[in-house]
Image (cartoon, rainbow, N blue to C red; front, side):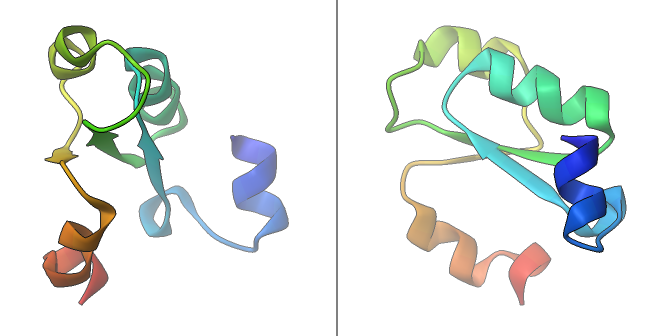
Length: 70
């Protein structure tokens, strides 16, 4: 994750990791970025919730009105 952020010329504060599993959320937290749990993916929903992402969405369209993206 750090290499991707760096190669994009971004910082952790400017980065959001969106994933459907607890591993995705843990990876984002370890990288110091905000995390979004996507409930519609293949990951285990209870494990995703237990990983406590910063935000949970049922549809990526929900992000269009979230303050992080406005």
